[in-house]
Image (tube, helix red, strand yellow):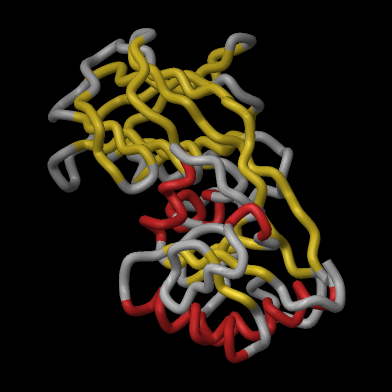
Length: 249
């Protein structure tokens, strides 16, 4: 859009979402559909952007199609805005200084049984701190690697700025696949791997229980040799600001 008042949905359940909605309104935007300060003059189908405030509201879009491209605010993944950047984002929406990128939605199965979806990352992690297990990563075309570690995380480009990056993985551009990163590997030579989906993880040997975590939620225990397959199930749109906002956007 360009020139008109930007129409924005603000998602979040706490005081931060209310403060973000107030910032949108103060910057000349219109907040709609269930957000604090929202107006009945328009609804979500008119929205130019969805501001997802905090990771719970962002990760909820693994199970819900957003009405407009998502712009994370105060999140640990993605090109997240700070609350101070919200006014600049509204200005960018007004002038058309934005673009949309697509990030994959991951569907996850364990031995063929669906267990859920993830937007940012999928993690296998030992339940006891500092207790290592042996993990494997593979694709239909190759065995990628086997290693001993506390766990392994596979991140989309959205999630590659978060836990996977903290564990030593690269930040991925949209459309480049996913990255598999060992967590605290039992070696001085660490590797990470960028591959196209589908990707399969497995626990080759466990010395303690191993949990499967989708985004920030533990959903199951994974026994040895069970195939944890990550596949693409479409995408979710995300907004990028091309000018007039902070570099974090």
